[in-house]
Length: 113
Length: 114
Image 1: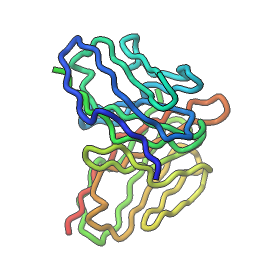
Image 2 (image 1 turned 90 degrees about the vertical axis):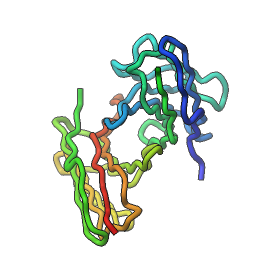
Image 3 (image 1 turned 120 degrees about the vertical axis):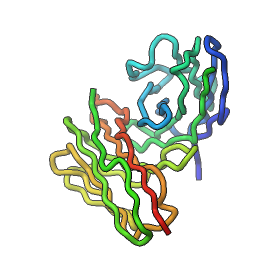
Image 4 (image 1 turned 45 degrees about the vertical axis):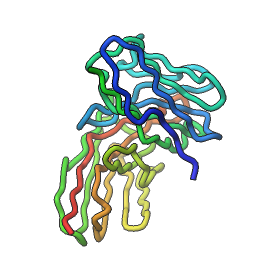
């Protein structure tokens, strides 16, 4: 069964460093999303991406964050200068179209020290 | 912003028992979804509901989309140990021009004692 793949599974970084989280969405999907989940809390929407541009973003997704689809398969989330409070699980999701089910990857645990 | 109130926050049950959980919202959603999350994993979809009043089953799971479009419940019958995990409701506005983002509840942690 097709699945969303995320790498790495765990990323440890120093505060102020840039990180790039990578996702390979399901191959025939056109809509891509990033969510995050701070430990013990609910999953929160960050950004949605379609047709090579951001279609919606939350207040969390400030100018320290950016997303990119650098080729036909990868979808990345970059955090330019990480803060302690960026420590969380980051989930990538994809959907065939905007009304279809969003399928989630297993997540990347980001630890900012 | 939109908020979902999910209850209860946790449940401890014996294997074989049924369990119910629900979500309410102050605003309407056009799609309700129920996900399960195992430790260290991403949310996995259990049931999707698309119409107000819809009642849908998936094995031992039954979920309903409230008639007001502001609530949903999930029932698990005859629980088994592998039902352990965190259950999240999620709402999506998703109509023409509406937001496709998922708004999640805070989750219900289920523990099943064998």
